[in-house]
Image 1 (cartoon, one colour):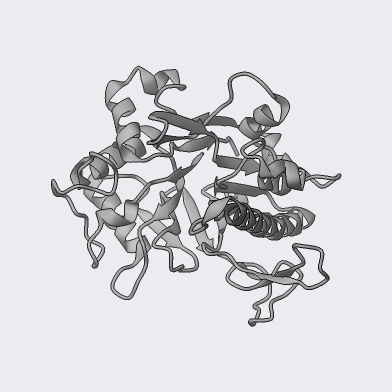
Image 2 (spheres, one colour; image 1 turned 135 degrees about the vertical axis):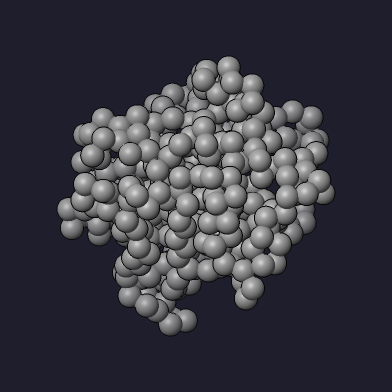
Length: 341
């Protein structure tokens, strides 16, 4: 089975308020790319990946008049994709849902959230992801109330052969200090956002541990907006949020080979899954933001990971149409795992 995660930039802007595809020559939210060009590029990437299950990050928004899952099913039907059914978890108000596209002939899935519901006061013991998590972030003996702007999607997946796997799709909030004025305020906001992000990942890790303690196979996949060695604030806190979810201090570890490469390699080339243009510096920045972490029992099956990078992956690079589609579709590239259950 091939399982993938793919953050599709501004996917939401390619659908009208009723969830119909905008197959026209008007500009998309991507620079110098029309809406029909981006839709066709995304479809070509999906066809090339040929995945059985895709965790779509930044999927179309759900609202009063639109349903993210139905919008993606229309997209799949129009372009004739195998992944023709979609599953969404909790709605959020960011216009960026987390929605699973899958081939119903090979997988049965359901949204299966775990944890207790909470009121506004929250709970300490890994509550449901649409709830509130109480955690003291600044050692003042007063717990802060943590929420997810994009609650993770918890999926109970069964393969055609009956194998059960817990998938957790994530889009962890960015640490960017939006709205800050001056260096001091930028630093304060950046540190506060980093604390919140790490608390979200502690919450996520607690859920992972619950599944591991129950003897379940676990896969955490999506965009963390973070990684080992990514920014200077990591030195202040001692580790990245990715390392928290992977497991530390004797916890049962999850495994992602690309994360391991960065953890062990201080210098030299590093894997990347995204590419952003820095206007002020007039250059591109490549960074690893997207991960597929698996529990030890899944790692023992010797799966194969792949980042569908248009320049770093030889097969992608030597197929000009696919290479251009990857660059046109999004500022992130898919990450996939092939696993023989």
